[in-house]
Length: 242
Ligand SMILES: Nc1ncnc2c1ncn2[C@@H]1O[C@H](COP(=O)(O)OP(=O)(O)OP(=O)(O)O)[C@@H](O)[C@H]1O
Image 1 (spheres, helix red, strand yellow):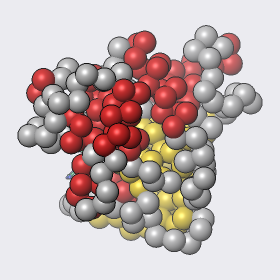
Image 2 (spheres, rainbow, N blue to C red):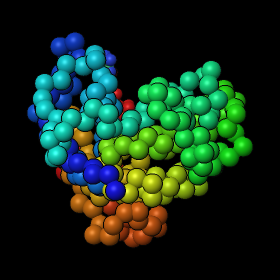
Image 3 (cartoon, protein in one colour):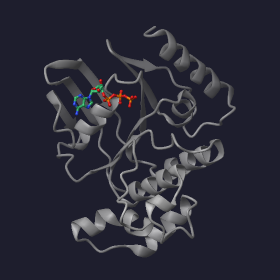
Image 4 (tube, rainbow, N blue to C red):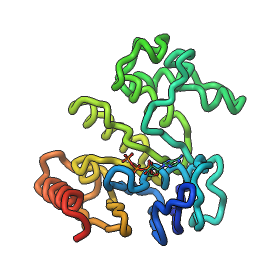
């Protein structure tokens, strides 16, 4: 098993002098799923991108500390809100792109297996333009799951999926990412209630932790505690910090 560190993210961020968030501390527990919810524009994607080392436009003043003291560089896999599949590559080549770009051995058999696991068997040779939005999102998920990284950053990875496929992909990701440190941004309280070890709502005024059921994820869709937690989150999202 690969060691998945805890991450402490703390600090403030601004874009061109306009403050986005100030003085927040986000504790992301090692080997667990943390879900981050909150209103549009509050800064969730920016947090993910800063941790992934991707956001050059933002002015971030703070620290990102991993519990094992090692840098997070080359230890994160990031799945963006839009699928970012290369339009000129086939699905199979897109799923293998990480290894290809690094000059590593390309594990085509494993990639074909991953494509099958996300329900896209038979589509390996298609270009992204020949796939539906939900299929492209599953392709991006397969590409992320191919990256054998201890820290996984997912930005609304299931948002384009129909209800059945969404539940199936949540369970697949939970299975394949067991013991990884996962930070999942979602707008869906039902998703957060099912998948989170800890769930946090990001408000413009700071972070609010949500009490989670004692049962471990993945929780049943119709489990009463899951539904109660989902309701509590929705209330907080609608009415603000409580
Ligand atoms: N490159 C950028 N330059 C300037 N402002 C930016 C840039 N990227 C994001 N922002 C601004 O920062 C704010 C936070 O954006 P971010 O994408 O992090 O929000 P979010 O909480 O993930 O929103 P959503 O839920 O809609 O995805 C927004 O007001 C956005 O316009």
